[in-house]
Image (cartoon, rainbow, N blue to C red; front, side):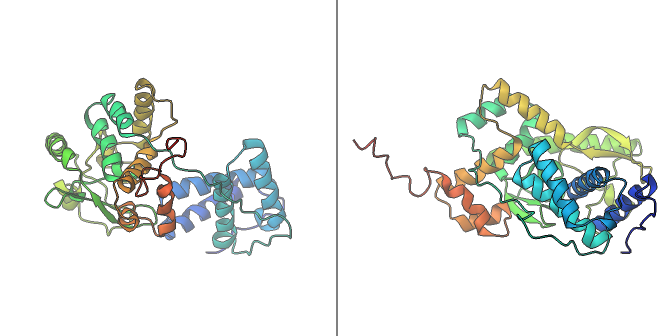
Length: 334
């Protein structure tokens, strides 16, 4: 991709927007996730405004270091946040400006991530949270724990991804653009079937009024209109209202929004009287930790979570209730 033009009088607003458009195009070309696109665009925009009116092609490693250090000091950014910003700026120079980002000798730009044990909820705590939720939100949160799904994977589940016969759920286009198969809890089969019956009635009503067309998966070949309106392609957790798609001009019902689940989950945690700073992702941590405590091998847990490296899964072996549960505290042995 050709580099963005360098203005003689500094970075004008039109040039700034042109660079961001080049960035978005390069990200889409590489099939990065929408989350990555939004994060990279936000960091690059902040970097350009931080050094304005200088053009990024006239800058280099010292300017990147100054921005990262400022972000760390002023925003108290964590190591992972700083590293995300660095990834975005490296992508800007490599894929958009087609320049090598030269770093002067000194402290490394990339921060060393802190090592913290994941927040895990006990089973009674999870049950208390679920009691505060109703309807499709309760079912979605139960799947986060029962299947180990990421929130984005759960909200984007389609009817075809649920296999009742084999007790499986396929999480498609997850982190790293991968599909994986995980568990469908037996206790959720009946409520999920009843929920899908309601969704099917909603879909039929949408078809009658000219809606009912679900967008195809991001990385899939574009199917025909009849396929998009078919039942297997519909969302398991559709939004409450259908809206006009700005791109296609068709009336479509989006999937359940992640922020809606996050908001209601936070309310449920507070209402249940739980003092842990639990989030929706804590349920995925709890899924893995409880499987490990039950004696399942780490490789099986790795496959269910979809981790590339087993080292990532090993963080769940922190649990003192795992295979070494017979180890007793010396105080208890006194």
